[in-house]
Image (cartoon, helix red, strand yellow):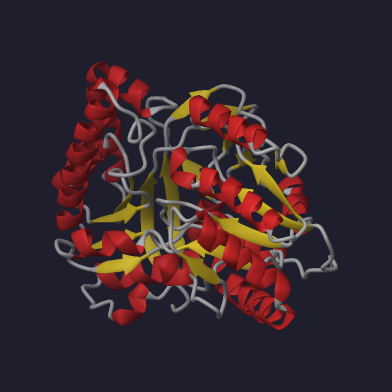
Length: 414
């Protein structure tokens, strides 16, 4: 990991919600923070992660936490429902652990959504410690029951609204709030002392690879995401059918597990009904690393078809492997994709618009080359190293009471 000549931040703790695992003396995690924390730690006097931690073998594809990151675990859960079931009898121990840890810190960074975020923010404030809120997702749209009917969907929406109120309260009391989606700038900018756009990519600068694959039929579309309703995969499958009707030879490769089993089965049924079994391939989840990198390098166009999104890390990954991007104009995407410059933007929920953009890229070599080259340039500013330094710099300014200015809303400026 890179190191700062002198740390930008002092002793820093980052509270996150993703599960981590201690096994054979090492800590592992599957989230981007398993690696991103190491880059952020390079700019801190000391960085401690506080995730749910289990003494157990990690899942396949998990990455070891870098040695410059300290880990102080809290009670373990893998899903938010499990957290609520255990919280009542774990609360006292959690707050005592947090009080002891926060006492020796200079700043507490709370990554939201986080079921216990409100209680931990209160603990930090009672200890006289400044907090920073990182909004990495939108609780109002990103829950697995949001698109279903019935009691569970109703309760999920109620809980999401409750969490949004807690998040706004945390933002109001924090020195700075960074949001991973441009759509969250409005509600949180209205209450935050200082507001910024943020990102926590997993890709390192050394992993950027120049494209060597020749452009030839079939045109391979790639999509990396969970099989979930918010990812718009049904519109993307329909777009493949429309493009084929225009005479363009295309294939669609999807990497991701079924976050919603019913939706996953529905997508496969849609593919079968349209007669696209030889055109659409579901690869399952590919672990971050060589297998996923090979998947990107075998593609021609990266399509992000989401109907709801934060700041997708796959965008940086696609650019780093020389893929021109077609993306829907939702969430944080319009802040980092400029139509016709470093990608093509289309409205969400439109198979026709996705098909038009794919056909346009396939038929215009000059446009493809411009987007690919600009994508490479931006990828260098969207790596974990760059964004970690940018985040540390913004937090440092906020803690000194400085105005962050308009540059805080540009992910490519430190």
